[in-house]
Length: 384
Image (tube, rainbow, N blue to C red):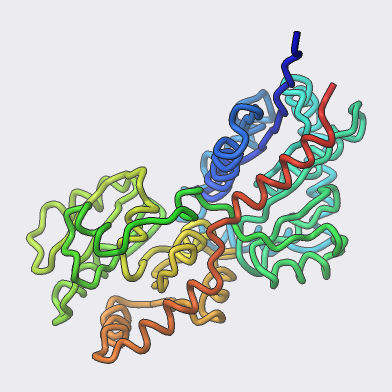
């Protein structure tokens, strides 16, 4: 009688301060499922929301949107004040005390062979919990911002630190993280971004868009300001293109756009599940400077037009895009119109160059690279 090989257990710890941390976790989980679904048991957990933990830690995540929008100055100051080795060490030691028991309970419940974190504040308490566990289990960490990231990401516990760019790798090493354990992977995006697709014209036709018209995709949310003003400026200009807008749950933006008659073709969506398809059907992307949406856009080789950013890490993200010449940060709707006029110049040379730059730095296979390392570690460290 054959014995059944036990499934490898992989635990991913994430957060809900913004979209990027959980989206990265889901991307890796999906890559694991595609390659080893029948042999792998993967769980995604937010330790401070899904498990008993100090209430103020959960509240800080649940009120993240309100904080960064209503009090950007306070957010910027708190980010800067904690972004040093000394301040980070104090925060790490406090979190290790506050969350150690929660982490121990989670580990006892899931008994993972390997753990992945997509949120920097969980590394220190996870290391403290793992230090007393038997058998020893490795844990990895994925950095979810593109440049000039917070010092707390570089807590030395992870066996592997997956960074989105070579710049962040160098920052990690300068921050004291062992170079041999830092891997440049990119930010993990949904596996659909790495799959072959129809040509752009075919995707547009399937979506009901004009197959032959330059298409500008806006990806909005409740966190992004002035989307409507940019749409108005484009519509009132002499530009010849089509627009697609994903409101991302922003009900007021959806209502405003739906209530107006537009000169240009405008394809309006609220919340969608087919972002990879929409991005691959577009020619350029307009959004905020979040690490995830930038990584998704670059994975599709899309020029990025960034119209909003929160203080701290997103300013570094915007600078990274500009340094790679893969897009621009735009201050006003007038800047948007001027930039689009340049991209749509007759010879198309500028658009091609920016598109090539975006494609060059995009990493659509990041989730599969990280999943493969997790799987290998899980095989080597199967829990008892």
